[in-house]
Image (tube, rainbow, N blue to C red; front, side, top):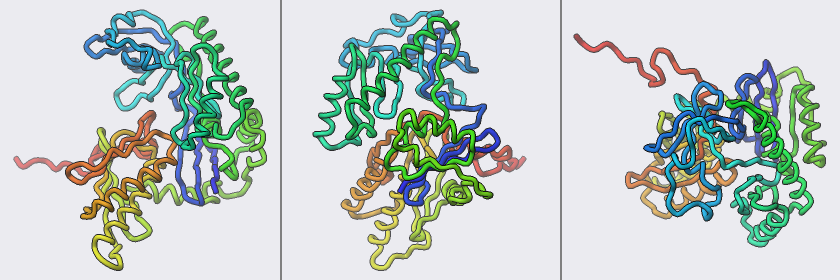
Amino acid sequence: MKQLIVHCKDQVTQMALLEHGRLVEYTVERAEGTTLVGSFYKGRVVNVLPGMQAAFVDIGLKKNAFLYVDDCLHPHLEKQPKEKPSITELLKPGQELIVQVMKEPLGGKGARVTTHYSLPGRFLVYMPSADYIGVSKKIEQESERSRLKHLGEAIRMNEEGVILRTAAGDESHGALESDIQYLRELWLKIQERAKQAVAPCLIHHDRNVIERYIRDAFNREVQELVIDDERQAKQLLAYVRTFAPELSNRVHVYRGRDSVFERYGVRDKLNKSFQRKTWLHSGGYLVWDQTEALTVVDVNTGKYTGTSDLEETVYLTNKEAAEELARLIRLRDIGGIIIVDFIDMSSEEHREDIVHVLEEHMKRDRTKCLVVGWTKLGLLEITRKKVREQVMDRMYTLCPACEGTGKKLNSFPT
């Protein structure tokens, strides 16, 4: 059973996804700080750096956006030149172009942008000039993959590209046709706005957090969507009726005295899930440490002593930790490199099983993840696509005393 819980208060919107009562996704968006990923800008090239094979583009933000040479070439790899051209052959200072944000400004870096445009719909991702058909890897049945590829070819025009999303499984030709037609018209509007706009400026902003979540996560598997704001509920219901009228009866307005997060236990689940030390049901625990370059997780047996031998105790703790890791990485929206120090196991079969458990549970994550494997030191490497500021960074304020180290430097002896 899946439930989407939406809490709106003081210009802040919070959304939580529960699976069988367990919190698996959480996002928060403030009215003044909406996400930029997916938005289109008309930008102006400020400078071109052949040594970096990149350009900096003014899109109207505090820091110029970064455009790498690969994001200027044709989206289809087979249509790219065999020898990569210099960025100076593709872009000139002062040149104006449409770019799309693919990664938020993070830390001291500006946004990462691309000219490989894409517009996500409910069932597919529309790419105006990619010239290829893709199908979500999460659709594993070969007959269904083949059917969707044929439908993709049937509905696309000229050099358009289409990626059929997981939600497209078992959907009809008419549903996919309607989706791509809406996105095609949206792309034409973006192009028209760009012609009339003066660079640098925003020409299309992706939907707000509620509508994005509805588009990407509200499907037949979600039994109910509960929201505690009457005005937002009306807008949300109107949006649902446009693309999934069969799901409109699953939208409910919460009118209780307590917060909707309190009513569904989301607040307590958040407090437990975002601690530096998170406990497992068996008595083991995880310790999380985040650096600028990567996230490190240490697995410990804690209070769990097992019932038979040491190897079995260690294996069971690691297995439970792997399941919880997949959930918490998704919940905390951790991106980049993740290093996990599992408890040492002597059995190669157990080590392989831990990787398998992680991979299976990470399939539920809508963000691209990869379990790289074990290092020579017995650490497990994982990567997860980083596109926006992590939830942890929005939830915590850097300590002014220790500046994030957790320790305060004493004065050195004189």
